Each structure stands twice: as structure tokens, then as C-alpha cells.
View (spheres, rainbow, N blue to C red):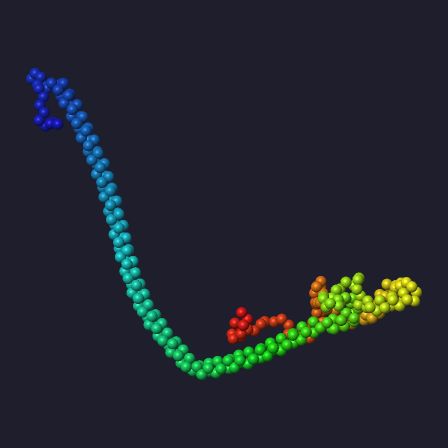
Length: 273
């Protein structure tokens, strides 16, 4: 807009055209307002740019501080690495020195103890051989003793004696088969009772009546009078009967022969397997 060179038409001798002046003034006001608005916008943009510049400056200062801190930490880490390397070297040298000392002492001790260990080995070997021999003798003695006990248990006369002593009714077949414990059909003294019945039939003509209570009293008179004596006496063995199990209530005389750990030597290991 050209304000300085603007010329108005004159009206008469003394003035300008009023309409042109008013129109020009309106144009001046509009363009001046637009200029003011542009100035305000530019000022706002400048303020925003100035704010961003300040933020960039602050961020730059923060980055500089972080870089300085990182450099400081880097220096500290480098110093710590140097100290660690030196300490590791010292520790390694000390460990090698200590290990060499231990090895040297162990060699000296091994050389000094070699003769003593050889003596100990010889002593242990002799004890091992002696113990093996004693165990073998004990094993043979135990086997012989057990075989004798087995032979005694299988003796038929011994079973007869026990049956007679305890008045145990048992029938022994003539064909040598297993004896029977059926006391209702057979009796230990069946032959003697049969002879008495035959004698009674010859004299009277019919068998005498035998009182069961008298027979029980007769049998009970042969039992021990003391309960302690009954407990102390050995009980009858019924191992010959298929319906009973043999139980030895008296126990073994030698308690040292009871069940215990089995000693198996290396030479005998294959035999036990």
C-alpha cells in the first residue's frame, strides 16, 4: 500500500474528494490490521522458537553432564580393572606357591609313611588270612553240629521215647509210612489194652467196662506235679506228622550259634553266588 505517494483529486479550490479519502482510509485500516496480525504471529513463532532453543540448550547441558559422568565412571572402571588384574596376579602367584608347598610336604610325608604303610598292609593281610581260617573252621564245626542235630531229630527211637514219656497217642504203621496223630482210633498202648480185653473175654465172656475217668487219672498220675517242671521239660516233637510243625521250645544251648551276619570272603564269593 502506497500511503506516502497517494494523491487525492481536488474539489474546487480548497479540498479533496471526500469519498476517495474515506475509501483510502478504510483500505489503510484493513491493511494495517493485517500487518499487525502478521506481526503478532511472527512474535508468537519467535517466542516458540526461543522456547525450543532454550529446551535444546538445557538438553544439551544435560547430555554434556551425562557424558562427563560416563567418562568419570569409565575411568573408575578402568582403575578397578587395573586393581583386579593386579590382585588376580598376586592371588595366582600365592596359590601356585601354596600348591607347590603342599605337594612338596605330601611327597615328603608319603616317602616317610611308605614303610609304615607296608607294615600295616602285611599285618592286615596276616589278620585276614587268620580270620579266614578261623571262620572256615567255625563253619565246618557248625555244619557238623547241625548235621548231628538233624540226625538226632530224625531218630525214630527218640520220637518213640518222647511219645511214651508224655503219653502222646501216635500210631506207627508197620509199613514204615508217616505216623498218625489220630488219638481216637489209635493209642500208644493199644496192644496192652487189647491183651487185657482178650483176658477179660476169656474169663467173663464179654469185655470189661473201662471207666474213662479212671484212665485219665491213671495217665495224669504220670505227669509232673510242678508247673515249673512242666515248663522246663522239652515238649514233644511232632515233625513226623504232615499236619503239625516241629517246634523246639527248649532253644539251643549255644546262643553264639544263633542267626547273625554271614561273612563271605572274596575268595568264597563265587561259591556263594
